[in-house]
Length: 189
Image 1 (cartoon, rainbow, N blue to C red):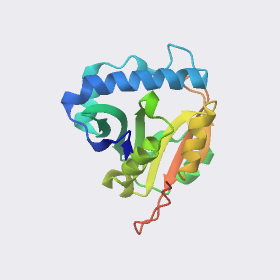
Image 2: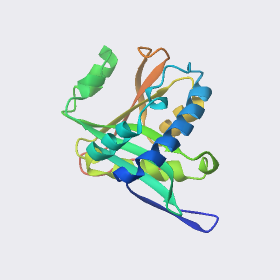
Image 3: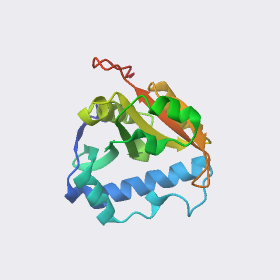
Image 4: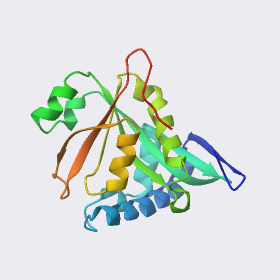
């Protein structure tokens, strides 16, 4: 992917990236919070420490997109050995009981000036192609129902809304991306 003739490189983050990744996430999450109508004190990503970001980089698959060596996008994929941990209704249970494990996607952020350029699509597709995402055939994530732009983004990538709940003080949808076990997926550009 290119922007203004400057190459974007996507790679696994290293702990040395944590401070800049933290700033990128907080900026993007503040925009997400405003667009979703979420109160200031609700999103843990807005108060997450750099040490916490370092730990996430060490323990999970944290991809970053860089331009001139600076992070311009990020997404984290975590392995979950029990998808039922995300079940909160009979509707979600019907789907989640079909899987023994899953991937969970979080901390998805793109620098404001690069939103709507395709970078987010590229990051999401790369995250969904990671072995942790393809192993079980199920990737999950949450997003605010009120954030129409993000909701449409995920639906356009092939995610389905399983159900929604409001345990965190705002209505969140649980999205699921289910790929075929023969390695095929429904990734879209």
